[in-house]
Image (cartoon, rainbow, N blue to C red; front, side, top):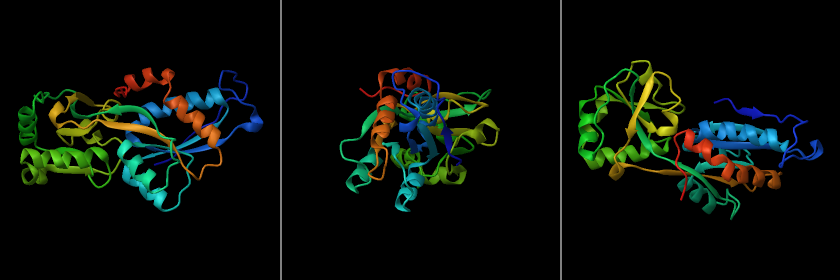
Length: 253
């Protein structure tokens, strides 16, 4: 996935403004599910601070692969459980983790398709049984995919669903639903809402739901620790809350 870069306008003056001589080049590896919120917030931060921000978005599996291969980053935006693993491995600066927002898994159908009943675990199970085809993220690569495999096991549907299941590697997994190629899409809500041609039926029933908390953290390899802290403070600050809510996230209590 191509990185997204923001370069600040040098003339912009605000509370976070810094002199051009102190502007940092920040490299961020971010979960794809956080893209719709992190992208505009990073751009606002770059404009306000004078720092340059270069972001790569990907699945949790891809980000961990990149870090294992020695790819450098200043800031990470990750699922909290992945951040815990990386912290134990020394890949995150102790005490630098800050919660940003959380998002649940939702169900998507085509924009003009009939919405199935998913109001209870039993109704959701029947919707899976009735669907001719289903798309989700590869459970080896993404947070929601791993959880959905466990849900299918709990519902006794593992074998029944195999013939009609399609796996995506990353990005907007439910795009095939919008193109009419797949009937039902299951993915994190923040990655359903932006997709053309689909509509969100709703979140999974609470007893089957997984709320993924996303956090920001600093890596030991950063050469711009102060700027990295400023970015995380911005992403986790009060001024960012409305953006998360508008993109399908909930605030972390």
